[in-house]
Image 1 (cartoon, rainbow, N blue to C red):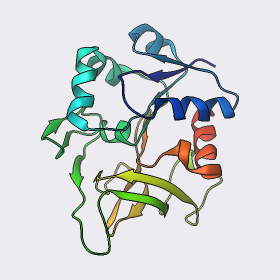
Image 2: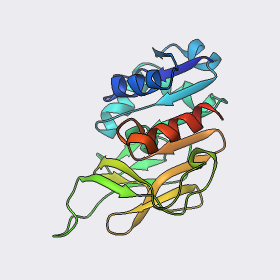
Image 3: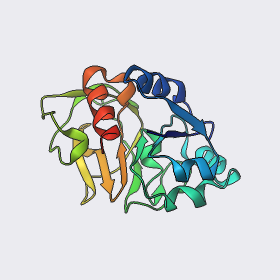
Length: 195
């Protein structure tokens, strides 16, 4: 199986590569459109800031390539957010693959921003969550979120519900860090590789 990890100088790439290695999967870190198109699976990890990430994608021409991919595609953390239409973070247009606007959490005394730590998943749907339940916890680090909508395949709360995972066709996204979420994250990555 050919696995490609999108290289746009986003953070957290090495952790994702190591997580794939632990599953026995070798991946190629690449910005080459032909390698991305020919891959059996594409992962799109990211940490950082939306406008800088979109600028890097545009500079590499990846903003035009990624929306045309037809194989199973998984955006992780910022990589999930970039699948949306627009982000409140520096008023940034995104890839436009899913119909959501990324919003900033409003901090309060009990719920700090960034939202950081382990939260359980709720309302699980779809093949990424095979073998998992609402009792399972994953690890989040984020200040921005996608609201719950028809594209939502898992929810979490901080303090109101938000999309912990999304899907539209072959495009999947998870707000949490699969590679930092222990056995649950490993199961989700394995489920993705089995799509």
